[in-house]
Image 1 (cartoon, rainbow, N blue to C red):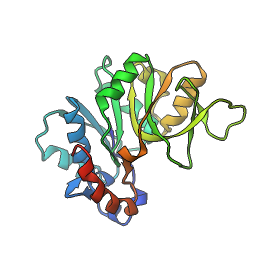
Image 2: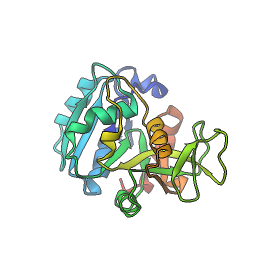
Image 3: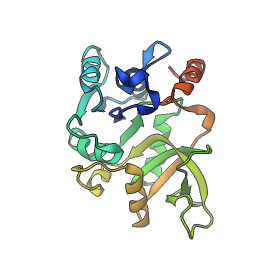
Image 4: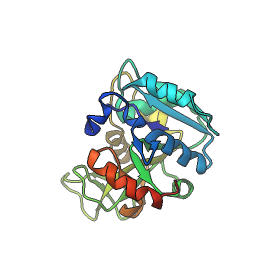
Length: 232
């Protein structure tokens, strides 16, 4: 699933007349780059959620011939945040296969198959790609690599602080663990709740240099130079 419905406020004024997903980096839209990366990893079914300039995203997807089946999860009526988006899109998935969830404004050269291999090998409900970067919303993981809480919460000992990379592999069972998508809710909060209930919310630690957030204008220029080091 490609999370592409956001308002793209950090990219204004570029997103005043287009969705974040259709902002170009290196002559290619972020959405196309993400779809091609997923297809290269063997993904055959992709779901893209839409809200901001939804018609433009739908028209773009329909104007291309993809190797995979690309479906739309429509959030025109209400932007559902990351957690609500997953729950809303659940009927579009098989219910038996793992789902790779990817923010549209993220570039990386991560091996998605290796992430899923780790996910399956550890029998996780969800596996979050993380790295040693400094952000305002750091997550605390135990020595076993499992999510504990947000950093800054009291009573946490023996934990490592990592930054979430906007890429996750989730088991289909996750959808039944999420609240109904009648209101927006962030997925990280749900992962923390599930972790406190004993569910395995694991981590896949990667080098920060193998990842780039292009959701801000100052990183777009950086991305132009960084792209040649990616698979695409």
